[in-house]
Image (cartoon, rainbow over the protein chains, first blue to last red):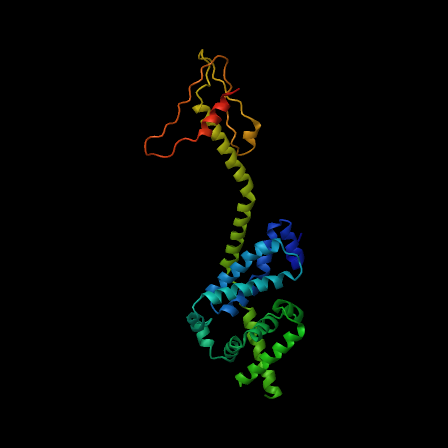
Length: 174
Length: 139
C-alpha cells in the first residue's frame, strides 16, 4: 500500500490493522500543521513541541479505537486543543503574556515592526473563537466544512466568526 | 474602512498566512515521535511473550528449588535419585498445588516437627495448618 497517497481514513484503518508505517505517515502528514497551530495557541516553541508530541502520542491510543464518526484530522485537532488548554492552564499566566513567540529571536524581533508582524500580533490578540477561525480557515486554508468540524460548529458560524475577525482587524490595523 | 484598505488588509493577511505555513516542525520532533511510538509498540507487542518467559522461568526455578529441598528424593539404598513427578496443573500457571516426590516403598519419612512459638514472638500456629499437613500425609 502506498501510504503517502491514501487519505486519512484509509491511513488510520491501516494503522488499526497494525501497519506500523501508517503512524509514521500520519505524523509526517500532520506534524507541521499541528506544530504551527500549537505555536499559535501557546506562543512558545518549547511548549508547542511538547503539545505536538503529546497530541500525537494520544493519537496512538485514540486512533486505535477510532470509529470514524469524524475526520481523523478533526479529531487530532481537538486533541491538540485540549492539550494546549491544559498547558495554558498549568503554566503561570505571567509567562504566557510575557513570552511572545519571537522573544529572544533577533531576526523576528527586527521584523516585528513590519506590517505583517503587526498584523500577526493583532490576530493573536483576537478573541479565542475568532482567532481559531483565522488560524484554521485563513492561515491553514482548511475548507469551511473542515474548519466547522474542527471547531464543532456550523459552517455559517465559521463565516460569521471570520467576518467578525476581519472587521476587528480592520478597525485595529488602520 | 474603504474597499482599498480592506483589500490591503486581505493582501497582508495572505502574506501572514504564507509566512505561517512556511513554518515547519523541528526535525528532531518527528524522529522523537516515531521513536517513542515504535518504543511503545515494541513494548506492548513483546509484553505477552516476555511475561510468558518470565512465568516459565519462575516455574522452572520453583521446581528446581523444590527438588533440591525435598528430603525423599533418594532411595534408601542410595540409588539413583528419583525426580519428582510434576503435575500438568503446575506447568499451566501459578498454582498453590505442591509438588511431591513419589515415595519409594519402605522409605523413611521424616517426622514433622511441631511448630512451637517462642514466648512473646509471633502467633501460635493455626490448628488447621497441622491438619493440612496430616491430611497430605495420607496417600
